[in-house]
Image (tube, rainbow, N blue to C red):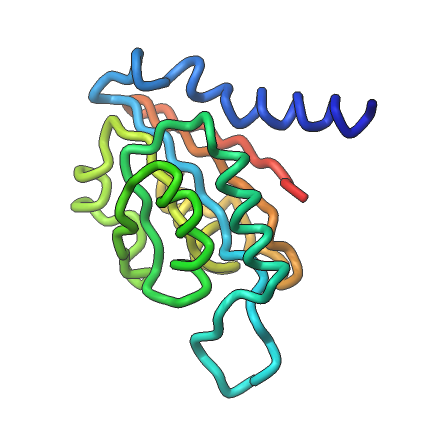
Amino acid sequence: MKRALFFILLIAAVLAPQQFYGQETTSDQTTVYYCIRHAEKDRSNADNKNPNLTEAGKQRAAKWAKVFENVAFDAIYSTDYNRTQQTALPTSLMQELEIQSYDPRNLYSADFAAATQGKTVLVVGHSNTTPMFVNAVLEKETYPWIADDNNGMLFIVTKSGEKVTVQVLQID
Protein backbone atom coordinates (compact mmCIF):
# COMPACT_ATOMS: atom_id res chain seq x y z
CA MET A 1 0.00 0.00 0.00
CA LYS A 2 2.81 2.41 0.92
CA ARG A 3 4.59 1.60 -2.33
CA ALA A 4 1.44 2.27 -4.39
CA LEU A 5 0.86 5.56 -2.58
CA PHE A 6 4.49 6.57 -3.14
CA PHE A 7 4.21 5.79 -6.86
CA ILE A 8 0.98 7.81 -7.17
CA LEU A 9 2.59 10.77 -5.39
CA LEU A 10 5.68 10.45 -7.56
CA ILE A 11 3.66 10.52 -10.77
CA ALA A 12 1.64 13.48 -9.48
CA ALA A 13 4.83 15.38 -8.66
CA VAL A 14 6.37 14.66 -12.05
CA LEU A 15 3.20 15.60 -13.90
CA ALA A 16 2.44 18.73 -11.85
CA PRO A 17 4.38 21.04 -14.17
CA GLN A 18 2.57 19.47 -17.14
CA GLN A 19 -0.78 20.26 -15.54
CA PHE A 20 0.14 23.93 -15.23
CA TYR A 21 2.54 24.34 -18.13
CA GLY A 22 1.77 21.38 -20.38
CA GLN A 23 1.67 21.26 -24.12
CA GLU A 24 -1.82 22.73 -24.26
CA THR A 25 -1.04 25.72 -22.05
CA THR A 26 2.64 26.37 -22.68
CA SER A 27 3.17 29.92 -23.80
CA ASP A 28 6.33 31.15 -25.48
CA GLN A 29 7.39 32.40 -22.05
CA THR A 30 7.20 29.11 -20.12
CA THR A 31 9.98 26.55 -20.24
CA VAL A 32 10.25 23.37 -18.17
CA TYR A 33 13.57 21.56 -17.73
CA TYR A 34 13.69 18.06 -16.26
CA CYS A 35 17.30 17.64 -15.16
CA ILE A 36 18.82 14.32 -14.13
CA ARG A 37 22.25 12.87 -13.57
CA HIS A 38 23.32 9.86 -15.61
CA ALA A 39 22.51 6.40 -14.24
CA GLU A 40 25.04 4.10 -12.57
CA LYS A 41 28.26 3.83 -14.56
CA ASP A 42 30.78 1.01 -14.78
CA ARG A 43 33.58 1.79 -12.32
CA SER A 44 35.62 -1.38 -12.95
CA ASN A 45 38.37 0.48 -14.84
CA ALA A 46 39.45 3.73 -13.18
CA ASP A 47 41.36 4.71 -16.34
CA ASN A 48 38.22 4.60 -18.49
CA LYS A 49 37.03 8.22 -18.78
CA ASN A 50 33.97 7.26 -20.83
CA PRO A 51 32.41 4.17 -19.24
CA ASN A 52 29.12 2.59 -20.18
CA LEU A 53 26.24 2.03 -17.79
CA THR A 54 26.17 -1.02 -15.55
CA GLU A 55 23.17 -3.35 -15.61
CA ALA A 56 21.78 -1.38 -12.65
CA GLY A 57 22.34 1.78 -14.68
CA LYS A 58 20.48 0.37 -17.67
CA GLN A 59 17.60 -0.54 -15.37
CA ARG A 60 17.56 2.99 -13.94
CA ALA A 61 17.59 4.47 -17.46
CA ALA A 62 14.55 2.34 -18.29
CA LYS A 63 12.95 3.49 -15.03
CA TRP A 64 13.49 7.13 -16.00
CA ALA A 65 11.66 6.44 -19.27
CA LYS A 66 8.76 5.02 -17.23
CA VAL A 67 8.78 8.04 -14.89
CA PHE A 68 8.67 10.35 -17.92
CA GLU A 69 6.12 8.37 -19.96
CA ASN A 70 3.43 11.06 -19.50
CA VAL A 71 5.74 14.02 -20.02
CA ALA A 72 5.66 15.29 -23.60
CA PHE A 73 9.24 16.39 -24.18
CA ASP A 74 10.03 18.70 -27.05
CA ALA A 75 13.75 17.98 -26.84
CA ILE A 76 16.26 15.76 -25.04
CA TYR A 77 19.78 16.99 -24.36
CA SER A 78 22.77 15.02 -23.11
CA THR A 79 26.51 15.44 -22.88
CA ASP A 80 28.51 13.35 -25.35
CA TYR A 81 29.55 10.75 -22.78
CA ASN A 82 28.37 7.13 -23.11
CA ARG A 83 26.76 7.13 -19.66
CA THR A 84 24.61 10.22 -20.29
CA GLN A 85 23.65 9.16 -23.82
CA GLN A 86 22.72 5.68 -22.56
CA THR A 87 20.66 7.20 -19.73
CA ALA A 88 18.72 9.36 -22.19
CA LEU A 89 18.25 6.59 -24.78
CA PRO A 90 15.16 4.77 -23.41
CA THR A 91 13.29 8.07 -23.01
CA SER A 92 14.35 9.27 -26.46
CA LEU A 93 13.18 6.02 -28.05
CA MET A 94 9.86 6.13 -26.20
CA GLN A 95 9.28 9.76 -27.20
CA GLU A 96 10.74 9.34 -30.69
CA LEU A 97 13.15 12.23 -30.17
CA GLU A 98 16.77 12.48 -31.19
CA ILE A 99 19.24 13.08 -28.37
CA GLN A 100 20.91 16.44 -28.89
CA SER A 101 24.35 17.09 -27.45
CA TYR A 102 25.27 20.03 -25.28
CA ASP A 103 28.62 21.25 -24.03
CA PRO A 104 28.82 20.91 -20.23
CA ARG A 105 31.44 23.69 -20.17
CA ASN A 106 28.88 26.12 -21.60
CA LEU A 107 25.81 25.50 -19.46
CA TYR A 108 22.59 27.37 -20.15
CA SER A 109 24.00 29.72 -22.75
CA ALA A 110 21.89 32.42 -24.37
CA ASP A 111 21.63 30.22 -27.47
CA PHE A 112 20.46 27.23 -25.41
CA ALA A 113 17.91 29.37 -23.55
CA ALA A 114 16.55 30.72 -26.84
CA ALA A 115 16.43 27.27 -28.48
CA THR A 116 14.49 25.79 -25.57
CA GLN A 117 12.22 28.72 -24.71
CA GLY A 118 8.62 27.62 -24.32
CA LYS A 119 9.54 23.94 -24.47
CA THR A 120 9.61 20.95 -22.14
CA VAL A 121 13.14 19.59 -22.14
CA LEU A 122 15.03 16.67 -20.60
CA VAL A 123 18.65 17.49 -19.73
CA VAL A 124 20.92 14.58 -18.77
CA GLY A 125 24.18 15.52 -17.12
CA HIS A 126 26.59 14.66 -14.35
CA SER A 127 26.94 15.05 -10.57
CA ASN A 128 28.42 18.51 -11.09
CA THR A 129 26.83 19.75 -14.32
CA THR A 130 23.22 18.95 -13.41
CA PRO A 131 23.06 21.22 -10.34
CA MET A 132 25.29 23.76 -12.12
CA PHE A 133 22.73 23.90 -14.95
CA VAL A 134 19.89 24.44 -12.45
CA ASN A 135 21.91 27.17 -10.72
CA ALA A 136 22.58 28.84 -14.08
CA VAL A 137 18.84 28.99 -14.83
CA LEU A 138 18.24 30.36 -11.32
CA GLU A 139 21.11 32.83 -11.76
CA LYS A 140 22.33 31.98 -8.25
CA GLU A 141 24.26 29.23 -6.50
CA THR A 142 21.59 27.21 -4.71
CA TYR A 143 22.26 23.52 -5.33
CA PRO A 144 25.53 21.72 -4.52
CA TRP A 145 26.99 18.89 -6.56
CA ILE A 146 25.08 15.62 -6.33
CA ALA A 147 26.65 12.92 -4.14
CA ASP A 148 28.63 10.43 -6.21
CA ASP A 149 26.37 7.54 -5.16
CA ASN A 150 23.12 9.38 -5.97
CA ASN A 151 21.79 8.66 -9.46
CA GLY A 152 18.11 9.27 -8.69
CA MET A 153 17.80 13.02 -8.21
CA LEU A 154 15.37 14.91 -10.44
CA PHE A 155 15.24 18.69 -10.70
CA ILE A 156 12.13 20.12 -12.37
CA VAL A 157 12.90 23.72 -13.27
CA THR A 158 10.02 25.87 -14.50
CA LYS A 159 10.83 29.26 -15.99
CA SER A 160 7.93 31.56 -16.76
CA GLY A 161 9.04 35.03 -17.74
CA GLU A 162 11.44 36.12 -15.01
CA LYS A 163 10.04 33.70 -12.41
CA VAL A 164 11.93 30.44 -11.89
CA THR A 165 10.79 27.64 -9.58
CA VAL A 166 12.57 24.38 -8.82
CA GLN A 167 11.11 21.14 -7.54
CA VAL A 168 13.62 18.51 -6.37
CA LEU A 169 12.62 14.85 -6.17
CA GLN A 170 14.53 11.73 -5.24
CA ILE A 171 13.49 8.81 -7.48
CA ASP A 172 14.75 5.46 -6.20
